Length: 352
Ligand code: SF4
Image (cartoon, rainbow, N blue to C red; front, side):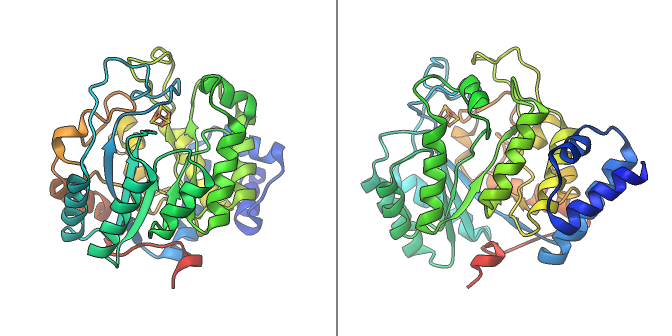
């Protein structure tokens, strides 16, 4: 590793910022020693704010119906081979109860954009969870909605909202989505969520079709400006029933590098080592944690529906029961030198 490259990591750690040309150097420099140094500094920063703690989020994938047709997604409306399912309100509440008993203090309700779940239904579900488990945080990940809808759900008790921006380049966004989806509306949604007072998560895929290093730098600039409390990023993985079925998947190396860069830019961000990262590499989630990630999101959905929520091919953990998932993850985390904690795991700015 050259002294210049080491100095760029130190500058990023000290200032949270680099020039575009410097970001480009950090994203493209090929040297294992450099990668190790970048990961090491990212770990030091995460430990300063979150110690050795890794937070768990219990993920309930409650519907795989979606009205949209994102070109990369296995549950896009146009995929007639997808076997569709919806969980009932009672089934969702049962998942929440099971998760609570297993020690989860954050539940993430994730689904396609499914008009079946109206504001009224979702408000009932969020209130139901909050009444049964007032010490649990509820995160929603249900796509683009109106500001009024976001407000109603927040009033009902939802604490956090995940909405990946997917790419901060409008031009790139239009290559990943059909014409009836709008970059500007995605940005509007993120702004509304922030204004309402949610802890907000955005994020992008790494190595998605047509993505350039300049696009990634635009993502970093957007993240820097938006300052999300949470950031979800994982490698792009093609799904066999989508227009991108023959595209190359994103790499572990680039994903892990971006995780470290984000940790140095936003020291307190809640940063998951994603299931997609664990799918492209059997040690992906461990590598993510060792690169500065501090969140894991095991699946709490009933095991009968897990294989149907296939956003991409070969997704891991679609067969295990939730309890098995946690045992497996706890062991994996422990071997990295970190530990899973039972906590809501709020962003430090939101700790009451
Ligand atoms: S990425 Fe989300 S919005 Fe797009 S098709 Fe898939 S589930 Fe629907």
